[in-house]
Length: 357
Ligand SMILES: *Cc1c(COP(=O)(O)O)cnc(C)c1O
Image (tube, rainbow, N blue to C red; front, side, top):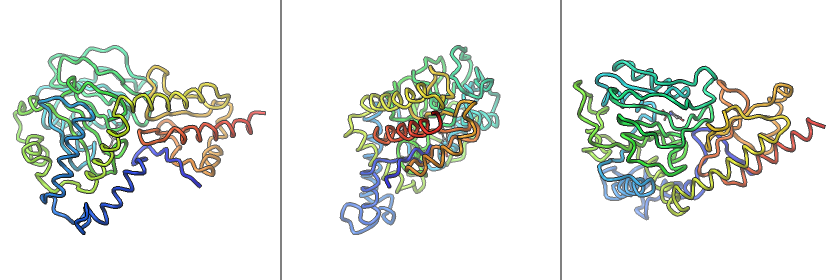
């Protein structure tokens, strides 16, 4: 049976990306060697790294003055690298979910943190609409897509201080005005590749302003100087990221992705809104186009476990909601075809017709 992969992360990748990676695991460019066993400093892997960086800049539209890094440690390492490199007096954070909270916790190791607004009062079901960003903060940190709660900040915020964004789960899902950001970072394993590599887009002129010493591995300047090869990079994940970027370019880039993603999310949200048994958990105007969170209405709550196994029997994978929201979450990242979204909707309707006579 065809599997429809709605997992939140690691998550679905385009099938040609997986096929090309499988081929390179056996033989990289006819070298007779696996991508896993060649030197990261040899010309074959250097070409992979160079193209991954160049395509990242091209497809996202990264202006001059910025660098693109591929580092180990995931997005969670960036929770500490950001304040290590930037926090001198104080930092400002927007608290929109569990990942934002984790980023805040790490920043507090380095200095005072001003939480400018939070949606904790309603279990992070919305994006705070109005708040002031203190202009004496060293930076302002946001999580653009709240993977667990299904909310998303779609606009590029005007910030008086460098804007730092965790875009782990919505990078390349829509156009972004990179010039408005100081740093954009994330783990690759939601929309870009396998786990094991994080991407960091960084405006160089925000660095070098803190007084503390920074260990080499945690210093952005060291990684910039060494072209993401200060130490051995995660070679295989970087290869797959390059394949995804080639695929994204061929698909028509981020503007086309946004059209497709908005269409897919619209189909699913419409099905939820028109359902007699399901309802969405995020406030409508804060809804994510990447992670769609929904539950059963109170009078049908007892059927939630039943629906999960019903959906699973029909090839739906990873639709169980995160424990902090409950219910269901369908992650519909770039690589998710609209046919799979439709298949989920059909299963939801089939279940509803059985339960509501
Ligand atoms: C998954 C996720 C993370 C954590 O990423 P790791 O690479 O596992 O550290 C951080 N932020 C967001 C928004 C995420 O979705």
